[in-house]
Length: 291
Ligand SMILES: Nc1ncnc2c1ncn2[C@@H]1O[C@H](COP(=O)(O)OP(=O)(O)O)[C@@H](O)[C@H]1O
Ligand SMILES: [Mg+2]
Image 1 (cartoon, rainbow, N blue to C red):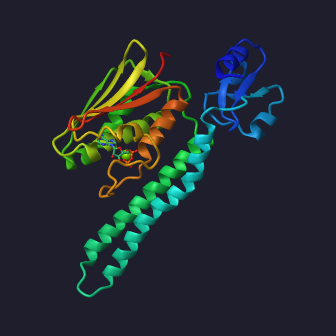
Image 2: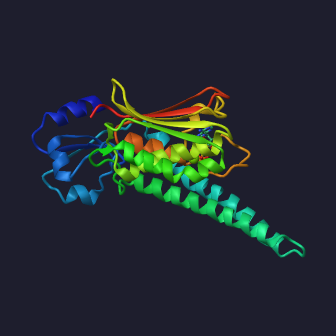
Image 3: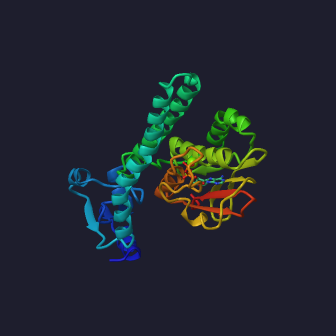
């Protein structure tokens, strides 16, 4: 059964029907199923307990999800990657602690660096846990629509100090009439990650514009800056987990921010892409279908 046929069959039925892929993620569900389940966004995982508790629900499985082998490979590599990423701050922490015991060392400075390493490890763990919650469907991404402007402005305000410190000026251009199919928390996660990236990577003197608007295709958020941008080779890989343009790891980051953004946006039925011209900044655009 292919996805399109599955959708047609499901939508034409009065009984609650849901189609899952082999990871038990929702591919399609009709209205009756959505009301039985209290929402049935594509991509959300339905555990066995959840379907077993609803005997009236007809559960169909897609024979093969085309992207599955790649996904499984990613999953297997994930644990290894997390462990590897955690070793870096821990190794640096050890060096710092050992240095602090040497006579004449600047203990205050070393402790401040140590604090940053702990912060880095904590950020990584938080991101990994959050991504895990998204994947198991424990975190609901979309639940009705949220007016975007107040959330975006609140996030921008909360980054004001960081932006000033990095010498980035942030401009919000938000159409007050735009609502997005994301829970406020998820909308915040998206905007925070994109804004934090511009502040972190654009470079002093840059401007970052956060735009919330409506096009013919639907509502969108675009976060663009006129900073350093990204090399053409990096661009297609930005949304991969752990991918960082800065291979030398001189800047802090987990490489998970854009992967989280992509997961949130696609779970809510949207799309995300990035465009960049080296030296002319990066623009990330998050689009949703018309609601
Ligand atoms: N606004 C930007 N300008 C330049 N490079 C960026 C920008 N946003 C993201 N990048 C690049 O994309 C990489 C991945 O971003 P992300 O997934 O948020 O991870 P992290 O910020 O933790 O490194 C960053 O490491 C950086 O190299
Ligand atoms: Mg980031």
